[in-house]
Image (cartoon, rainbow, N blue to C red):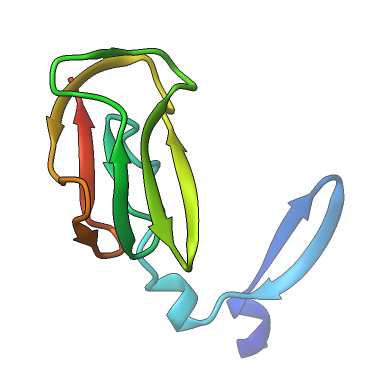
Length: 105
């Protein structure tokens, strides 16, 4: 009977499941949708080329900068349309995971 009280039922795409949420799951930090105006590094790397300047208007889908990570060059694409408020890195600069690279107004 004790175990049954801890079990929870879930409905996923019409199918019902019985599961147990352990303490680690219940105490986890809840996910929050990130602010699209703040561009953070998803992995460590270095800035190869900045394609925008402070105050520049940017269209959604345009390249903000090119960065090198894991021996590959990648284009970081603007997730929104806006004006560049701050650029917190320089070309050639290394950055850590979750470091803020750029901000929109």
